[in-house]
Every structure is written in C-alpha cells, then in structure tokens.
Image 1 (spheres, rainbow, N blue to C red):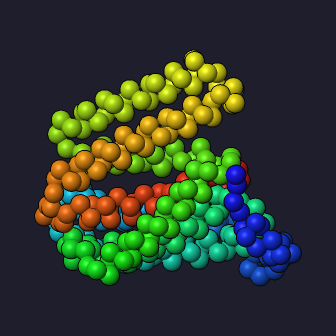
Image 2 (cartoon, rainbow, N blue to C red):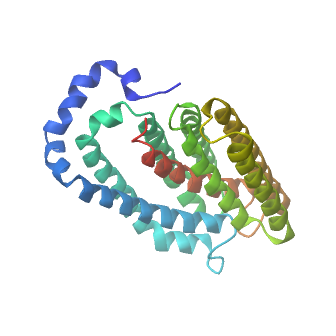
Length: 276
C-alpha cells in the first residue's frame, strides 16, 4: 500500500508539473540547497523550543521554572520556527512539486505539520501557560490533533518503502521515555529495551540474512510491534503511577508526549520523501 497526492488529486498533475517552471519555483530551484538549510534550521528551532517546553509538562528538564515561565521565554522562537518551516517548505515544495506529488512521505509530513500546529497552539502552549491545567477547549483540540497524528502514523506505518522510517519515531519515543522514567524503573525499562534490541539484531542479521527481504520484513514488523508495546506500556504506567504532580496530571503529560513526537514524525517523514 502507498498513499500520495496523485491518488487524491489525479487531475492536478499538469499544474504540479508546471510549478517548477513558474514563480516562485523557477527562482528557488537554483538555490534549492540554501532554502533546504533554512527549512532544517527552522525545524531545529521549533523542535528545540517545543521539546524544552513539553519536557517541563512531563515533569523533567527545566523543572526549576514553572511551565508558564518557560512558555513565555520560548513562545516567540516557536513562532519563528513555525513560520520558517511553512515559508521555506512552500518555496522548496514549489521547486520540487512533482516529487512531493508522488510521495507518500509527503502526506505523512503534511499530516504531522497540521497535527503539530493543532497540538502546539491549541493544547501545549495554553496548557503550559496555565501551569499544567487542561481546559475543556484544550481537550477538544487535543482530541483533534491526536486523531490527525494517528492518521499520519498509520500512513507512515502502512506505506511501502517508507514504513521503515517508523523506527525513527520508535527510537525517539524510547529515548524520551527513558529520560522521563525515574529511579529503578528506568533500569528495568532499559534492560528490557536492550534485550529487544539484541534480539532484533540476532533475528535480522543471523537467523534471517539481511538480504532475505521476504522473511526480514515480517520479522521487523513484529519487533516494531514489540518495541511499541513495551515503550507505550511503560509510558502509561509512569503516567498513572505518578498521578497528579506539580505541573498537572496524566493528561498534561500525554500532551507533552504527543506534541514532542508529532514534530519528530514530521521530521522523519521529511527525510523519507526521496524514497516514496
């Protein structure tokens, strides 16, 4: 299975093909690398500020400051990051429109962008500004943003050629939960995670040869499921075990997890655009 814009808007191909030869694509294409660097830098700014703020909602990181103070210090840079990725994304997209039109990864990236904006501006920022309190309006936005996030994840995981990129998101989630998990539980979590990594290496390099794709694909999918189950299970255990902390309860922490991971999914999908 693979989903792309051509399937959704098949009659738009002539217009898409013309974008590289008209404004602004015609003028962006010779300096494509320059605009790509701007896109990546904008993503770094957005990602860094978003991670710092949402780690605070998770109860780690810059815990010496309340979430509202961190929000006030970072909100301008978050705006700069969002504006930067949208503007540079439109420009480089116009210069490479045909590639994006045929790309399943581009669908994932756009869903992640929409979900990321909804979760950041509709949920994460208001929750941080309220020092962890989640209003009814924020809950509605959280439901909408999470639904779009999960749709993007489904496309990512089921599209041929790009579905290995889901391991980027799994790795990010594994490291995030490791950072958030306190005390001895962290070592238990890390021990099982290490055992799964070793088992996957043995299964995909010794038991099954790396070039035996017919057998390798189902094995990797099984390990993706095992990793996801363990990581999500440990995260949920920590959420409800900790109860309501200084910066909010389990829902506040879910907001933090989702907002960090949705931007990571967008970045991962962007790196896989060349494949499908």
